[in-house]
Length: 184
Image (cartoon, rainbow, N blue to C red; front, side, top):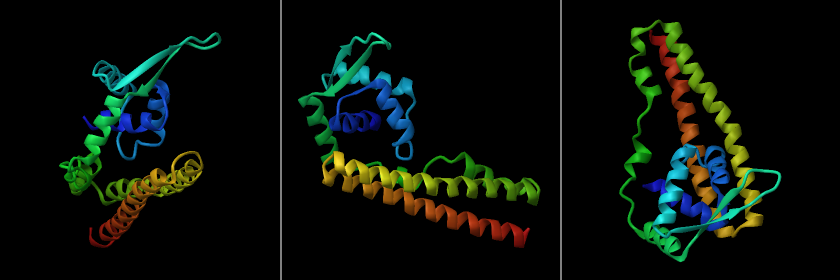
């Protein structure tokens, strides 16, 4: 259900096509909420049926036709209502399913080298995320010029969450590597 509100939040900034929304979710929002294209298009259709969005078909000569979605007053009201409702999903930011951690949990069944390879791959992944996160911060700074600075401030707060969580994961994996190297 939160995908709907994420889409409303993005469309509230500017009208977009389903393709643009899918691209944004895959590039910018994937660290907060992952959604594949079919989920996005399904939600757009439902939200339009519910009167939260309207769409306009744009005929193009050189490219395929497209549908541009805009938020309605009813959609904006739903978004604001959701934003003012106390959060009940806070635990999802603390605990989540992790196939990686499940693999680490049972890594004792493998060799020390195999366990270290697993941990090193995790470390490498999060080192690469540091670069991505600095790119995100730069993009937010650029967006401040385009959008309301107060909105960008909240984007920076979410980006800060990602940066701190990433640093914590890096610290954890470095300690895990040392434990495996010294104890096993």
